[in-house]
Image (cartoon, rainbow, N blue to C red; front, side, top):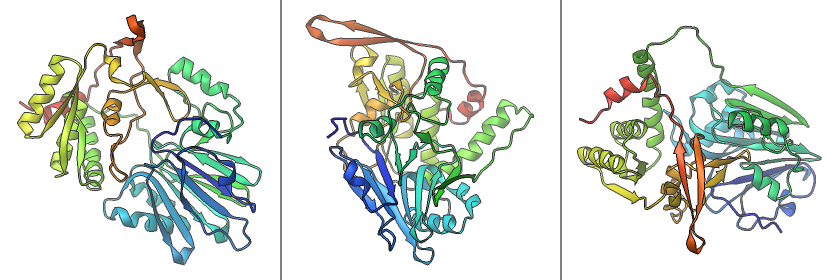
Length: 387
């Protein structure tokens, strides 16, 4: 039995085309069966999805197509209720009208199975933000949301992908299509990956066009806002209550402004008071907008607010934690169905210094590399500025 820790909101799955079940070979404390297919008549097709206690999978089906859908992640559609999206996705994928998938908003992975056709399809979100890795082996397809989780369960060979390691060392990010382990491939962004009769096919449902025309900062800002407005409205409408992390900086103020314009149900906003100035800005914004502000104080080093300094990206590489992680940690006891995600993103410009104190306590100090400000920040900041 593996002693690997169980992470929050993780997904494992297996498609077996033999008489055995995948769950017989997966042993992880805390993982539970979320969904499974009825299988084919000959007993040689069985799909199983396993997850952690807080993993939420939306499901639906299209009986006329004999297709079932499972959606992991946050998904929305401008004109379709969230509860109806799984059935809609089953119909679209079964009829192979893949171009309509670009109507979906959010970050998600969709699994559509058609046992009668012995076909399994994965749909990634348009930018490939929600991670999923897969590998084909004898008579089964293994897939999961985290490379180390798959490795700890013995579902990878463990062989290191040195191309991805080289990319991480040189660029601070893995730009390959595989994970840390060479037999785990990541879903392509904005694509449908189809497994049928032992064959694999990747079909993009969106293609981006590149223009050689340079936009002015004002044009870029207006373009970004035109995209963000309907997206935020659709996504915010899926949640009864929101807790928005508010630093007082541009990104969080813009996010809050969009939520207010969409009449979203904002429970409160939370700020991490690294400096007195940041805390004052966040307090002023919340006061002007009439929203309850929760302040998490920082005593001593910035790094002391985390339970550990590093976490791992889904593809298996260490990364320094982002500030919103400590906000999400304080929501770890929320019940299933409440959306307080733990972000897997961070600044890569940290120089981290470890200090050991008397009594064994360890703290960390950091110097954050300065990033050049975006040329689009001015026009957008002016639009949502609180005076």
